[in-house]
Image 1: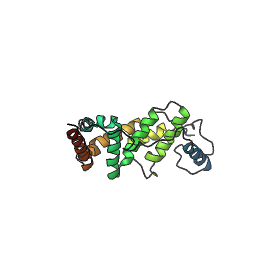
Image 2 (image 1 turned 120 degrees about the vertical axis):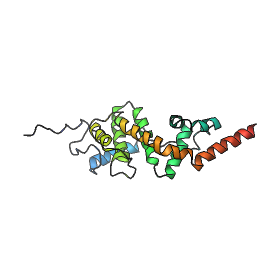
Image 3 (image 1 turned 90 degrees about the horizontal axis):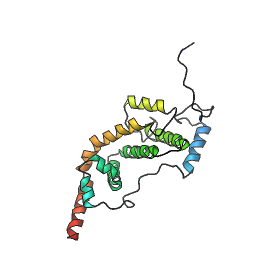
Image 4 (image 1 turned 180 degrees about the horizontal axis):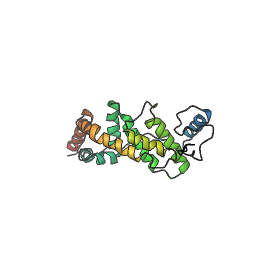
Length: 194
């Protein structure tokens, strides 16, 4: 008899399906996923488009070049950066980061479980077309934590993706035509007001 027993399934799991990552297509997990997505109360919402965000001031646009944190704390900055990431085919990094932020703000454990599963399916699963690039150590940590998801299940992965965006995409964003256009738009607004 082996001394390594399999970890017990979390109490919310249905005995017909021991697949915690919901990658299987059994009717139980598929039905739950469909019902949760249909309910508007906790569905992951995308970031509003630029039209919904307030127009950033010239000073705000300039502040985005001072630090990545300033860019990420600005709704208009996140929206502009997300549009840039879309042109680089890496928008999933921002979407994953935003989904993790939303998860961390959730207090209801049932909703946390469901959101964690959706985040796993959408961004961590190797079957996802929006899979983010995570190292094996972080991915294994997520796999362990998914047995009992919490609002902080993806913290290490979120930090890794944040760092990736900061080091890789952010410098290209600052030298992109899109960011230069925002700077010019801001400076033309300033000169018109004078």
